[in-house]
Image 1 (cartoon, rainbow, N blue to C red):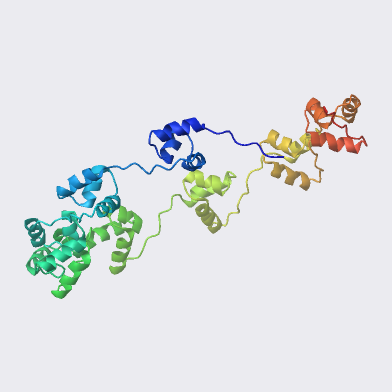
Image 2: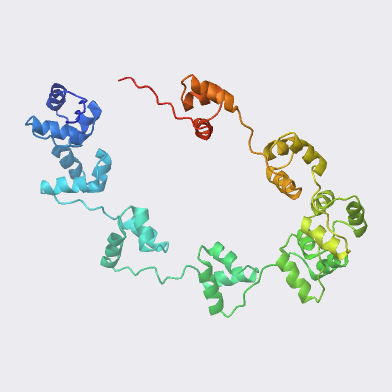
Length: 384
């Protein structure tokens, strides 16, 4: 049996009409809402030759712009075409290319400013190789080895106390260049300017502040404070405690466990645990949300673990653990129907799915209890 052919999106007449307008396969496809390959297949079937892509410009337009001295790239920008397309058409016409010209005055201005060949090329909008050839042809030496600043300029900035990175920014060079020139002149590097004096550090240390607090006061990094404190031979202070032993003991005697004490005192649970153990206090576990008596009462009502958890505001796993600890058996989910209800509906000729819809249960549940009762499945009647 053969498959049904797909309906065409266009007729041969529509294809011929668009073809007569001079459109190519891709353009006809866009008009008819299909792809170019489909159009190409039906065009060939009708014995029609392909139209090439329409030219973005004529030979006369190309010759006219070429005579104005424009190069391939500039002509392409005028017509919205690729420069390779312009080059192909120009060569087909046997026309030599108009290479971009470098104006001597403009080149000398850029060269005397100390720019390199790539920078001059970018400013003139030409290739780097063209600038390189032009410079060699006219006998100009490259600016690669030309110093970008004098030793005198460097010394003036160095004597102001500037570091290598600051000098590099001022002279528009890399930090590595500035460092190389400084070492060549036999000058030592300026370190980072200190944000505080030793006296300021000592005063804050005598107030009992730790390194983090000192750094915040002085607007410096903690590492810088640590380095200078060690240099001065000062011992480190630990972080100040957020609570006293007396506060911890009072809250512990209220029966609170570590997490609750931490929330009260604004401290971490781990910190509370460390100080509680140091004081020899035992940890309290989490408070129970219900008693054994409450669990037994709800269990005797025939509720299973999930329902008991919802009643007591506890998790099902917690209820299950406590129930097993008390030696109580689990109740499964309550049945939504009795065997008598199942048999009555079965006798009416209903199948498992229909019985499930009547009783609000899944058909697989109905099937399980039907098989348990030894009842055969009802076969669905089919319209032949």
